Image (tube, rainbow over all chains, first blue to last red; front, side, top):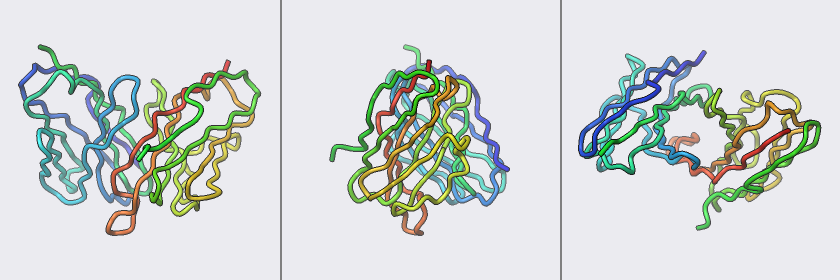
Length: 107
Length: 118
């Protein structure tokens, strides 16, 4: 079976750092995706982790621990435009998306 | 590149009618995905194709749903007959094979089709 969990909502301040956690239980796990989705728009790809560890891409970093079934997305130097939903998705026997975390960045 | 193209962008129909959603993937991409998104269920993968062949259709909700990919540049998702609970935003996405051969490269999403079934 497959199950993914992430917080429903988070709030942070402009310029701060925020960490969005994702836990998963996935059969035949291959990797973990993170997507950003602004209201009314399509998702856009942020990262894909296959191996344990941290991968950094500019202000965004993604971490994976396969043994713990855990991942997080780290957003640094938050900007107002980062207000969006962040979806984690596991790729195992098939693709399964989490419910999404709605991040609000306040001035 | 124009990106993934979907049509129509909005569709309003009555219960029992046939609905056909269309997708043109990014040229050269060999994977194509169909997703459905609702407030209640979030984003769900319905089916995906590799080189025009359906690989996994376990997400297709029932026999009323069917998807085809007659060539590398076109795919359809058909609902017949449609029901109010099918109301959702339907996304199409495409990607290239990863170095290991799986569908694990960046997926590029189309703008979506907002379907309303009355």
